[in-house]
Length: 156
Image (cartoon, rainbow, N blue to C red; front, side, top):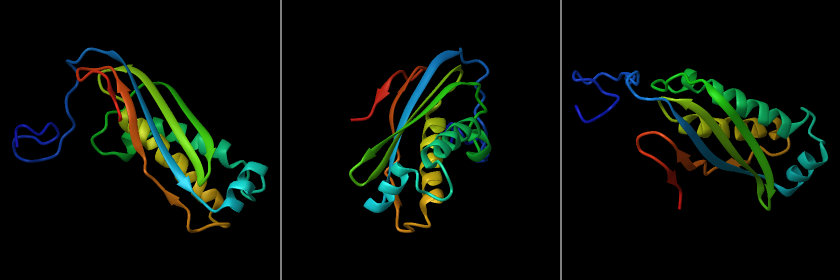
């Protein structure tokens, strides 16, 4: 078990000590999609959802989620987030989200970008569920990350 970074010698989960790691610029980009019926897409575009501004609310929810990731994912470190962007575009079957999170720190922001995308999509679902309870979310995935010991990575 000693090769597992988040398990100690006795097999218990623990948060990795990153105090000796240098601060580096870190960035992560994630994406996801929510599929819905065409009339729901039209209603969101037209601003006809009774709960209000769907994408504006989802953007704020995604930003808040990135900042609170360590409260949700047990072994994530709280990070001083430098920036979060949450951008949407309409696709034929629904709405696509792309999130970007940056920090200068000792550990990466992949989980923050993924959490932001997930919560933004869940917020869209919550706001539009009265029109379509059959909406589907996914896939949500990491597109790219940069910085840190492991260097840059990009999805294929």
